[in-house]
Image (cartoon, rainbow over all chains, first blue to last red; front, side, top):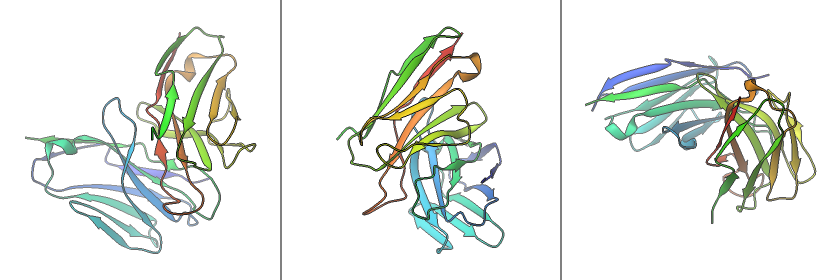
Length: 114
Length: 115
């Protein structure tokens, strides 16, 4: 089955700086890669996703890049703000029409220092 | 439109007791999922259902059973709870046809403690 590794487990950055979280996956058949943000005591919320036919996707301050050859994808947050503090999860799934669930990384606790 | 709802929000059980976690979605989604979240472990898939009447095991199915009662509802049952099942349980759903077929929406979670 799929295995997703996520680094770092904790990331502390100064407000206004950029943050980068990296994930690798094992199954070359995986073709859908979402990122979720989870605040303390809340449900995971999708913030951005990418499919394997795209190398990069951007939404305002958030971007995701995908390197299929290296089986590696990353989340980039620019101009970080206090409300960006949360746990971020990457995930992977083969989206070939079936209903299989997501395989998640173990999460990154992002701390924005004022 | 409530999205994905779960009951109860909190539950405390004694070892060996049984209970059912309820999940419902009003988005007319085809697929539904149960995950558990443990500290430092991310979310792990327990069971999923592609459609009414079908269920399949995920990564960590042992000790659980599920029922897809109809298109809206997907329940998770613990027949004999164990302390290792102390966790936060999330239900999720997604559509399999039409727009945004990849996006998975999560419920608010059920925090379960087994003593």
